[in-house]
Length: 318
Length: 237
Image (spheres, rainbow over the protein chains, first blue to last red):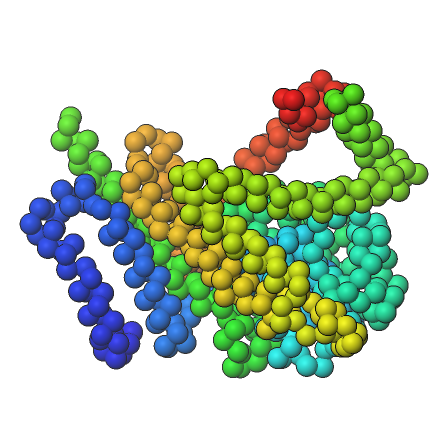
């Protein structure tokens, strides 16, 4: 840490310089008065530094915080890890770029795990931009690092279909009724890995990476509930995850909540399949825990400071 | 007839789906209804696009306040639609090399791909990221320990905020049976364990209660819709 501060003295200088006007105001108007009338732009600036400095620190040093996988992360990992090479797995990418920060690392880890296990991956999306998120993840993981995997034999992108939960209701009993081609326009009968696949009940596990509606909740309601033999694990945003806990563990054996869940799962996958020097792209969630830590500490500090001012003011009024 | 037709279609669709769920023989009927729904949802995209154009072109035509933004929407919409439909910069697919338009519209390197990667993705991600700044500001201004309920909420928020980061582990790592055997009874008080407890017990209990309430409400509302008692979804005309 000291070495970082010494080497990156210019960054420290910029941060200090940017906060000088605030310090001057505290000196001139007093701490309490400054806090009472604090312009929200100061809070924006503090949060900017709280996020930017850890990102830079981790980028320069490559150090991340140690992560201890939770029971749910381990359950998610085990659901996929128990499968045998060649087993079919459905990956539903129901999110779009605004949620990429939270869900991108999860999607990457899921695909890396499945590809390392040599599972047959069937990608689909209930969100219009989910198909692009699938393309991006394939380009990031499978194309550069799993060159032996062949499109149509080992993995396939079924693409987006409109109809929200209506799509789930159909594919759970009859996949071919809705999907006559893959997202590239190749007829189903010409795709080797579609041979014998008629519905998604044949999938050993369904992985839902979801940012809202339609997403994991709909997969639980329209796939797992009527067909309890289906196994579903999910990665969800921080906002959505609390709403999914009621389905754990019977309808949803594994759940990754937000970037924390992604980091825990990432650690399990990298420890098992990443080797000694894992590619940084497989450590994205672990790297993002740094900014999250500092931002959370800042928010706690702001709340505490604001409440101290509030209690002092209330005490004076009495 | 203007109302009777939609009412009958709604009732028939709803009852078919209910019957299909409970009677295995009728499962195919449900599938058929779901496929119709999927087709209608696809058509809704065209209606949505048409409505977007109509609304914003009217704003431009009326020179309504902020009409310039509507201009940006229309130009962006038409440009994206054009490059996607005519597949600008898309190479023919390997399967059909003689057909210029046989490639994917979102192929890497195509104009649509560039728009998605370098315009849409950063813009939407930026919009979402701005939330963090407003959350921090709102937390400073509004989160006050005014009464017991607010104190409980604050305490829970602190536990979750700390427990979802390494700070939770670092702050309470001393509650370790290796440090003192008696701590074996108190490991549940470690922040990371408290977070899991709050999420899986208090949060789950609250959410289940809300979900059951919502489900009962949906059943009641759905019945009213299916029986034609609630017609608000048909609009005023």
